[in-house]
Length: 328
Image (cartoon, rainbow, N blue to C red; front, side, top):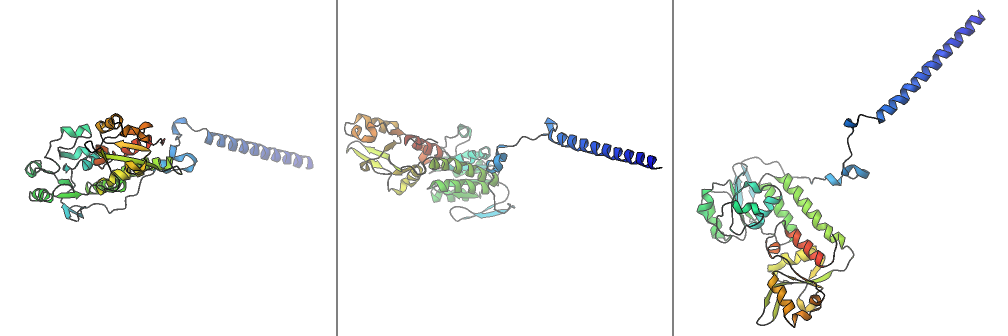
């Protein structure tokens, strides 16, 4: 009996040992299989997943309430405006408005524009409704737009003429600073029921511009003279410094890491707004002795990049930064 019992114990232990081995084998292979997934089922980490940084895919939060039509709001001039339905077709009277709409993907909605509009090229095929100072209310009305977006540079009597055609008119403030460019884009996004795209674009634009200041963080703030006019008869150079008309010009220089000064303040660099003026600095025997000119730190930047206060201000900022030797 003892021998039989001993044999049974051996068999029982053997079975337990075998079960343990099988369990361990299954566990190990199971783990291996969990790590060796089908390549087609493996998701590649995005750039935002690296090191736990999800800023790459950041989308700014839109906090406004969803729009319900009819939609009543206040435009930038303090006027109450009511849109009966989503404005799918609009007329723009202001190049900054036009360029901003194209920038965040709403340019296709423009069915009429001011004759000053020239950018982007697609806008040139859109019918003109007159100039910024003299928009034609009859032409605008004939297009039957859902809304008319006008610059605050349009004379009030012309705005009233358009309103008298029973059209919703939205007055949009011309930006006087870089910050106001972002504000304009967000405002247009709200008006056009496209806030998500507008907010995302404004955030991207702000990030691009911020990179310039970060590139020069801790560096010297260099003096820049923006020549708005050269009066040859009196050999007088008129700069942007201190003139409220050119406040946006000065903000561009500031965003590029510089400081707006007069020509007699020994600027490190000089910016002209047309090539003719730049050429006169080299040809004039007095002007070509200015240290900035002798160093070759003089350049022409398209006046439109300053005057049309829209998304293309980044090109002016980057051009100024390059002239100052700031690598972005």
